[in-house]
Image (tube, rainbow, N blue to C red; front, top):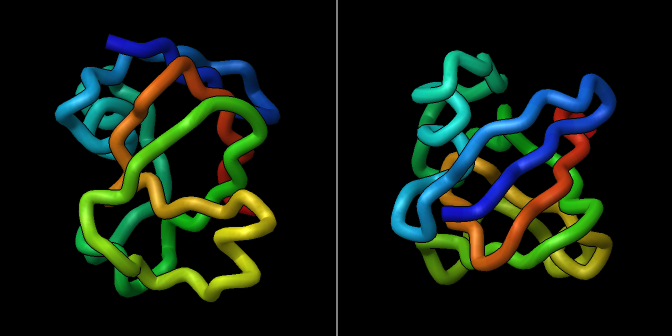
Length: 89
């Protein structure tokens, strides 16, 4: 289990390595934006300020440039370390 911190508000919750960041947030009572939960709608796009994730699907709805700039989709992102995420980027 890893610790996730959301910016700018500083909310924190725990996320198991085998569960998406979005589902972990919802289980903790933290409402993140979402719609499809499969990496295509981009409603949940966020910036990974610190930490490592692994997307459940090989190529989520992000461009190569967005990936390089640190954008993630929490609906299909699983933590691989403690995370700091800027939501609604």
